[in-house]
Length: 544
Image (tube, rainbow, N blue to C red; front, side, top):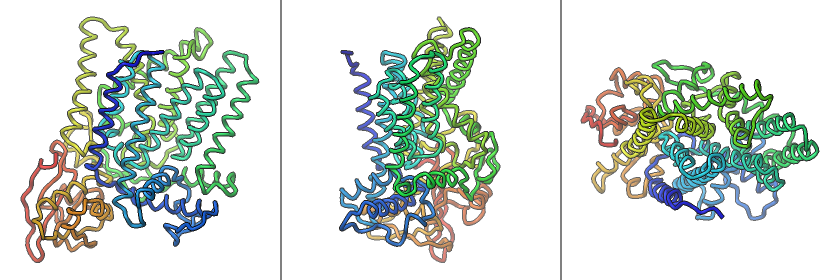
C-alpha cells in the first residue's frame, strides 16, 4: 500500500479551513438571484411530476414549460435549494440561499482540487508535481475568488474535473466499474453547460483512436462505447426535469436555445466597448493572455507546443497516437483544454464577462503546464534550471501575496501584459462583488441608531444589502431611483457610468470613497446629503 505524504494532506486541510473561514467575506454576484429562481421553478416542476404530496411551490406563478430560462439545467441550484430547505430556508430568505450556495460551490471546488491532484499523481507519480499543479490551480487569483461564489462557471469547472479524473481512470483500467463512474460523471457535467459536451466527445474519440491503433478488443470497446453513451444520456435526462417528458425533442430545443444565446450588453476590453453579439475571434485568447499569471501562461503555451510536436512525431515516425498510458492521457487533456477554446472561436459564440465561460478548461491547461514544467526540469541544468525555478516559484509567491493583499477582490487580477490604467481600459468588477464591501464600509461609518440611505438603479446592490449581517443591514435603507440623495454606488459597469467616472462627470464625480485593487478603482461610493452638495473625501486604499 502506498505511503501517504503528510504535507499534501496537511495543505489540503489547511486550504479547506481557510476557505470555510473566508467565505463570508465575499459578496453576491449579479447572476445569483436569478439562479435561485431558476432552481426553484425546476424544483416545483420536478415535485409536480413526481407527485409529491404536501409540497408547497416556491414559484406558483411560473410554469417550467413556458419559463423563459427553462433550458438551463439547475442540478446544482436544486441541490443548493434542497440543502437550504433542510437548514430552515423559507421563500424570500435570500441571505440563507446565498450562503448555502457559496459554501457549496467552495466545497465542490475543493473536492475538484482533490480529484485534480489524484489525476496528476496518476500521470506524474510522487507528490511534488501533483502538488505544484494543484497549487497553480488554487492560487490563480481569478479562479480563487470565483470559487467562493460563482454559481455557474466554477460549478462547470468542478464537474469537468470530476469527469476528467474518471476518464483518466477509465482509460487506464478499461474496467466496467470505471466506465459506470465515468458515465455518471459525464451525465452530471452535461447538466452544467453546453460546451461540456467535449468530455463525452473526447471519451468516444479516444476509444476510436485506441481501436485504430491496437486493432483488437473490438467487441468490448464497441460495447463500452454503447453503454457509456446510453448511460450518460440517461443520467443527463434524469438530472434535468425539463427532459422528463419528450426528452429527445426537448434536448434538440435546449441545444438550439443554448447555442445561440443573446446577451444585450457590451464588453470593455483595450478601451473599446464591444457588443456581446459581436465578440471578435481574439476576445477569449486576449482575456486569457492578460489574466493568467505570466509564468503559468508561458508553461501552458509551452505544454501545448510540446504535445503538438510530440503528436506529430509519433504519427509521422511511429504511425501511433501514443506509446504509453501517459501519452494517451496527455492527448486527452490537450483536447479537453484546447478544444473548447477553438470551438467558441470558430463558431463565433457570444461571450462576455472576460473568459469566465471557459474557466472549466483551466485545470486541463494547468495539466499541460505541468507537462511542460516536467520537461523543463528534466532538460535544463545549472544556471538555467535555477532561472526557470525562480520565475515559476516567484510567480507563485506573487499570486499568493496578491490574494492576501487585495482580499476579497481577487476577481480583478491582471498580469503585466495588461499594462496600466486598467479601470479605463477593461471590465473590472463586472459582477459587482464589491457592492458588498462598499455597503459594509457605509455601515461601519454610520453611527449606531442611524440609517444610511443608499440609492441606485441596480438590483445587484440591493441583493448585497439583503446579504449583509442583520446588524449591518439595519443601518442601510435602499431605494431604487436616480435622485442620488444619499449614498450612490457604482461599479462603472455600463458605458455611460464608466465614461462619467473616467471623465469625472456627475454623478460619478467627487467620490466619497473608492474601493480599489492596487490603485485601480473597482467601486465608487458617492455621497450627496439631501439638498446638499456632494461629500468628497476620497480614500484610495481603505479596501485593498
